[in-house]
Amino acid sequence: MKVLVISDSHGDREILVELVERYKDKVDQIFHCGDSELEATDPIWDSVMAVRGNMDFTDEYKLTQIADVKNERIFMAHGHRFNVNHGIQELVYAAQAENADYAFFGHTHQAKTEKINNIVVLNPGSISEPRGHYQVPTYAIVESDEHQIAVTYYNRAHKSMDELNSHFSKNK
Image (cartoon, rainbow, N blue to C red; front, top):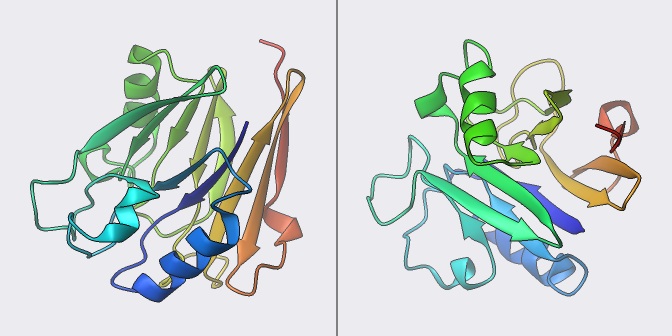
């Protein structure tokens, strides 16, 4: 499996178009974890699975999405309804309830990956308005095979952010 994860683009449609054009034939799925601030009818969503963020003021977006990609289950939410500013346990519980292998979220604008209860929990950071320790706009690529999961973060110039990258064993 190989997927692209983006979040918190806050009206920056051009970067979404650039990422879709760059990766559409190189990944199995593209995910946007909310706060695009684009209309839910925007043609960009023909190529991207998205959820509603707290700055997406339309009910046309789903609050959560489940995707099965190459026998791996992904739970995606923006995170504001799961109180991710105060911890990610609620998000992990929701992902567990869906038997997910991954939980993708946004909202905090901070790039972060960890494995909790055999679920890879990933925030790709904000592609437009980063916060926290790494003040660099980022997105993430998740690749997995039968043995391991690799998460690679990239900046807007598509250069790897090596200090953020992670690898996890698939041994449960």
